Image (cartoon, one colour):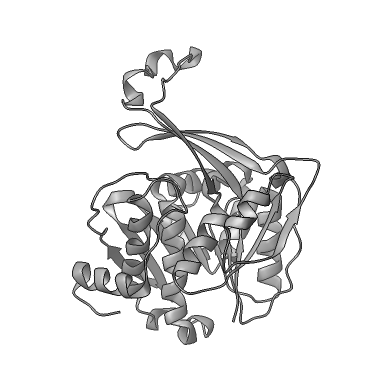
Length: 321
């Protein structure tokens, strides 16, 4: 089987603000916001949801197929990638690769400016098989919906991760993709936005999607898996972090761990016998892979071996992988 990763491919410019945003953003004056933050440090790194998920999957022993659009300055990023199939990456020589300008304060809150560049254009259309697993992460919103439609029509299981692009979808579009997705994954803020945009509550979302995964940062995550008219809840605790260095990209690392866990249960997953799957262990693995990203600067600078992953998993959960 193959893992298709669709998502943004981005140069991240990550900046450190040594104070709290909340001290300088006044709620009563938000209508005329005009602030400037003096930055301690600036680092450029390789990022984007697609790039990050693909990178984390290589650490877990996979060679994913990455799909996305890049610009004329992609060469440095291309050389950085190893064990990733780039045949699905389409280059546009008249534009630049997408760029994100991220300011992180001491409370790990972030303000991001994003230039989409070549991400505004479509990439190649993948040729899928029913034995493939696809994750659709934030990138070109129209293409996200197109790929979801393709997966649904061709009976290919897929994870839909709307992320920061969620506000680009209409209520009708979001309702349809929730119904199409095998797994709908969001953080708690995105879940609230989903409810607002669709006028669905969590129970309705779960009835439509079947599997709803919500992440809560350091508070862990919640997996809800439908079984007929009922559903089972799995509360996943976060892993003890040695030191939070940079929260950027932790969610993408979580998704790679999720995929790894799903493929450890792939017989049940592809038979759609979701209630037979060990969702607790899957969630714990995802939580652990996210931790490695949190403890390092940037989104693709952390490394670990499978044995190191297994040992740390046992240290935290007292269960052998």
